[in-house]
Image (tube, rainbow, N blue to C red; front, side, top):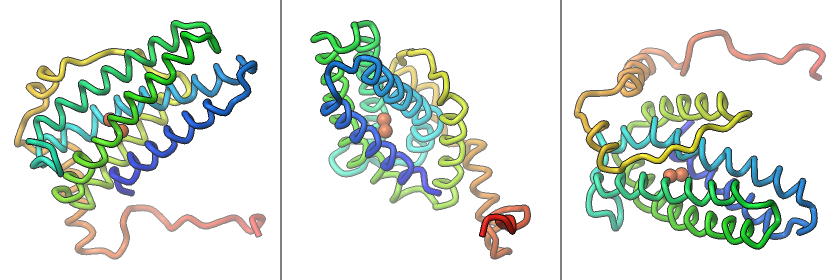
Amino acid sequence: MDITDVIQHQHNEQRRMFAALEEWPRDDHEGLAAVWKRLAILLETHAEAEERYFYPELLRLGTGGADAESVEEEVEDAVHDHNEIRAAVRRVDEAETGSDEWWTAVVDANVHNSDHMGEEERQDLADFRQQATLELRHEIAVSFLRYESLKAATGIPSVDKDPDEYIDEHRTDAPSETAQRAAQLAKDSATTDRAGDGPSLTASEDAD
Ligand SMILES: [Fe+2]
Ligand SMILES: [Fe+2]
């Protein structure tokens, strides 16, 4: 697995779900609310998982991708954008499903999210692909998907973060636990052909 692919894939899923809302029957409020709820959980858990597992490693290793001035600017921008997305999601949640106010807030959420994803892909993911090992990208993907899966059914509280405080809190040259696991994985894979412990996964005889 690779965290840059996981993030890119989930961005595509977010684009697809906004597109589904655009052509959903306008009078099916139950369906609109259900599709939105699923999208809102994805938007919020995706942003939180990035802030927990991806951005701290980017801050440590990044050098500023594409048109970014520096890695600090990349991370500050990302947290700022996540706050804007969280605010738009809250506005949708507070409006009556299917009302004009609700649709405006959905479109605003799409605008903020699209702007953010474009920048994140062009700068942050590109930067990380150039600076991080495949083992680290794998380890972050596992932590990221684990967190999202644990929260997928219920969602998470919407809590904004101060971008400057976030950077101060996470700025360090010391390798994180994730980075240490990745380094161990790289060492292990130099001495074995297999990626992990445990037997190979096989189907039952009934599966044929
Ligand atoms: Fe993202
Ligand atoms: Fe993001």
